[in-house]
Image (cartoon, rainbow, N blue to C red; front, side, top):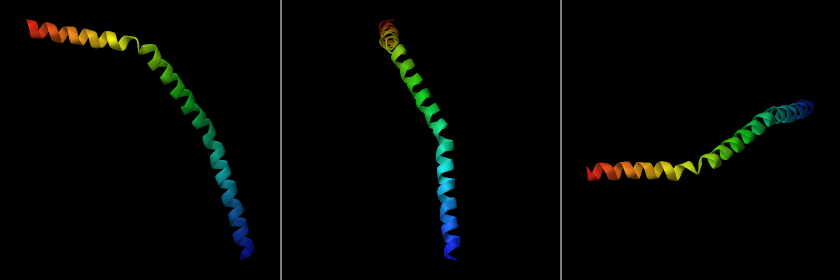
Length: 65
C-alpha cells in the first residue's frame, strides 16, 4: 500500500511537470502578444487627442447651428 502511494505521488509530480512545460509556450505567446498590443497603443496614442478634438469641434458646431 505504501509503495502504491509513492508511485502515485511520483506520477502526480510527473504529470504536474508535464503540464507546466506544456503551458510555457502559451504563456510566452501571450506575453509577446501583450507587448505587441502595448506597442500598438503607443503608436496610436498621438491620434487620440486629434479624435477627441474633432469630436469636440463637431459637438460645438451642433450646438452653434
